[in-house]
Every structure is written in C-alpha cells, then in structure tokens.
Image (tube, rainbow, N blue to C red; front, side, top):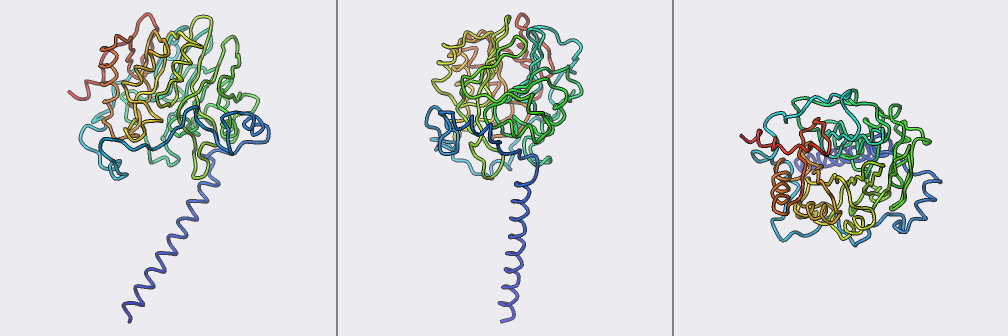
Length: 371
C-alpha cells in the first residue's frame, strides 16, 4: 500500500511540474518580443481586402500541404538529433572578410543562407537579414562556423531591407533591432509590419505589400510576388502573415529573390510577366521529400530559374544552418550537376565574396571541407 501511495505522489508531482512547464512555455510565447506582434487595425484592413486571406489566414495560389507523404523513407523527429558523419561541416567554412568600403555599383555579396547585399542605382539592398540563431531560443539553431565571420557592424550603409516571410531563418528579431536605426526603409509582406514595429522600427519606414503590389523607393521598384510556402512564429499564428518573393527592378538590373517556395507554375507566370531577369537568387537547401510542396529540390530550383527566364542562377538557403536531414553540401552538389546538365549559368561565391555579373564566381569551394 505504501508503494502505491508513494507512486501516486510521484505522479502527482510530475503532473504539477508538467503544468508549470506548460504555463511557462505559454507565457514565453505570449510575452517574449522574439515572437513578434499581431497586426493593428490598418494592417488588418488591408489583409481583409486580400483575395488570399480567407477565414483569418493566408493561403497559397495552389492547394498546398506543409507535410506530404513521401514515397521514399519516412523520417521521424529523432532523425533531426542523430547527425551522421559529414552531415554538418567538420571545420569552419571558407569565407572572405567583407570589405564594405569596396562594395560598388552593380555588385553582390552573399552573407549565407538567404541574406544578401546588392547595390544598384546607388541603393544598397539587403534580403532577409539573419545573423543570429534560426529559432526563438538563442542556443538552438546556431549558424555554422565561418573562417571569417560577418557581423552587422561589418556591413556598408544599407538603404533598403526586404523580408520574404516571418520564419526565424528569414526574420531575425535581434538583427532587426540592430538595423532599425541604420536602414532607410523596410519592405515586407502583409502582416509582418507589426513584428518590425515591436522590435523598434518606426512604422513610417515600413511598406507592407500584397502579392503583385509594387512600390518605388528612390528610383527602384520593389514588387512582392507569390511564393508557395507558409508563415508563423508562435504556436497559434500559422499563416496569419503573408509570404512571398521579391522583384527588384532598377534602370540597370532586374533581380528576383525567391524567399522560400515549393515548385509551382507560378514561376512561369512571374517570368512571363516580369522577366527576363539578370540574376535570380533561388532557394536551394533545407528541403525534404516530406516537405515537397513548400520547399524545392535542387533540380526543381534549376527548372524554376529556367521558368523565370534568368541569365544567372544564384543558389541560396544553404550552408549556414542545419534545418533538414540532408548533408550540408548536398544542395550545392546536386544543383551544380543539374545546372551543368541543363546548361544553366550558375554563380557559386563564397560567403563574403563580392562579385558582379561580368565576373561570376564558379569555384567549388565546398569541396575543401570534404578533402
């Protein structure tokens, strides 16, 4: 009888601990600034006018499931914690010290994952600035080590930041706080403005767009285009904000930035309506057969660049975070092979390497880690 009584007491205390843990988690999600904020009345009014906002949530143009049933191996969450050899880099990745004073007109530089800098018509544009963890908890989702790390203080003056969606590997709250007083303007999809305002960005510096809406900033046209993905930062805000890709058009360049997207016929539509493009920055990494409709496989990324009528394909969304089950360098190996097979012009710079369209970097720098 004493054993049963003791066991019941243990169960009771475990239940208490579980209840307290749930309360703490819910409080963290509710009150921590990292999760962003909900839209104000003005933003909500614009969201309600969007054809893609249905029953309080945004939807894709095509019916889309976040999780799909793969015909190949089924994975479990345990696989994300069991890391086989060569899944992640065994040493700091080769990179080049960013020399911001050398960053000139018509040049580009990749800062890892989906963070890029470009300069056109005298304007420096940055995409999806992420410099910290790709999660709400700093000790989780840390970036891979670099030989020459790049910090926000190393950047040139940034005029414009464009955000594709509010997932943590594309929208870094700490980075936005650090950039809030240093950036002239932010372009974001519908619903994302509230996050930035909570992190210190003045609302007058934020333009919130729907798909196929455009706005000019100092001679450059910024257009939000559809993507096939989803959004959310907390437990209860799935698809409450819009996601998308960006078309950046100046007198000298026509540029496409994909954000995150599964493959769809929309790429052909965008290519026909807004192309051809001088260079396209396309998602290539953190994919999985079970996420087939929200992320592209490398071979699909090559096809998407063809659909977009692109002169140059630049693979992004790889080599910075461990977000899927494939080896860290599998995306670049597969996409360079497919690009060669289909005669697609591809750029493969190191992180921090400044280049222009007349001098495309094509060195297979990732092979150094394997040898």
